Image 1 (cartoon, helix red, strand yellow):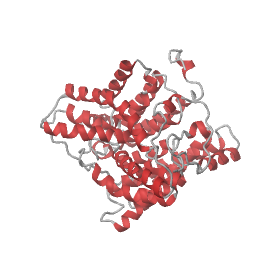
Image 2 (image 1 turned 90 degrees about the vertical axis):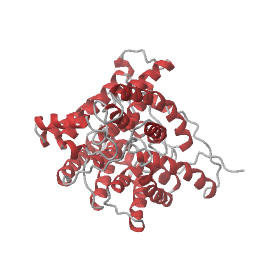
Image 3 (image 1 turned 120 degrees about the vertical axis):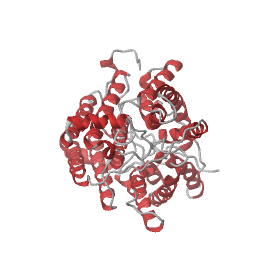
Image 4 (image 1 turned 60 degrees about the vertical axis):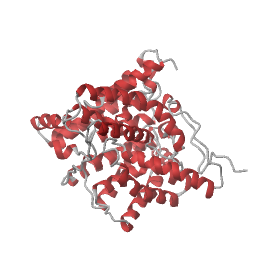
Length: 455
């Protein structure tokens, strides 16, 4: 593709996605202004920008629901503009990025602290003499380390805005090549690949900061009391997606449902671009159903709907276009629920509520090897994730992605060699290559194993 073509020629197959993304950003802003006054929202946005943002910093608690949702709308709008003006190819990963950015801007990302990382990624593309559009998605996802910029830049006894910006630019520069490497060693079993890469960066960055006199710490700012209002909003949103997918996506109802049923037969192993494989209708249905599943898990477990849990549900819905569906996420979530019965923690604990949602990063384990292994993956993840955040002091917002990566690296060769008697191999596909295409894909055959038989 010629990235130097005019913008209206750059986006071909899914160019019509942009207006709907803007509608989504507008709905977030409208919901914010319905829940709070403009004066309170402005004061809340100032609080958000001046927060250190380490996990868990719920913007709904510290700034109010209105400011949190407006911040989400602003970050979503910035993300849309970055994708548009970079001539990014629109595909399933686009929906993943929008889900991540809108979700995590409820508890860690804001419309200020994401910019240094985006600039760093842009400089990386200039250095490599490659189009920014090929790396825009990764740059946006690398903002998982935005709390590092906030912590250093706010000068809470250590650091200043200049050093915070410089560190952010450095992070944005190094995450893209690192993501390529981590993608290969996880073999498509961890959907939050960038989270694993960011976790490795944080494991270097945080000790270095501490050696220079910093003292970053985790936080547990967790809002309660919003279940009714957010449950209503989520139900309306999810059911609307299902109805649109069934009746208003340009396909007969039977064809839309048949596409969704075919989607359920895939493993979800990355890369699995459901938008390119099945089209918009099954993906919209999948997003709505998965969002309702996440909502039910939180409410049935006695949890709370707030910034972090809404962010988790939005993330599940985003990845519904790129690997997650009901049949491969439920076993993994069930593994976390099983851990609640045998381990010394409760499903209502805030970190465990997040693990119930973000554990779905390991959905490909369930889809590829079967539901018993999905339960095992979720069970292991429920404990590992509770400890991986401490060494990085909450600076990596995608902590579940880092934990999921560790489990995927261990489980993949173990299950493959012992249970399937096949030779473990490294993923041979390039991480960025599939992000640069929007043409239709043929879905893989159900239960297809790509690894070679052992001799």
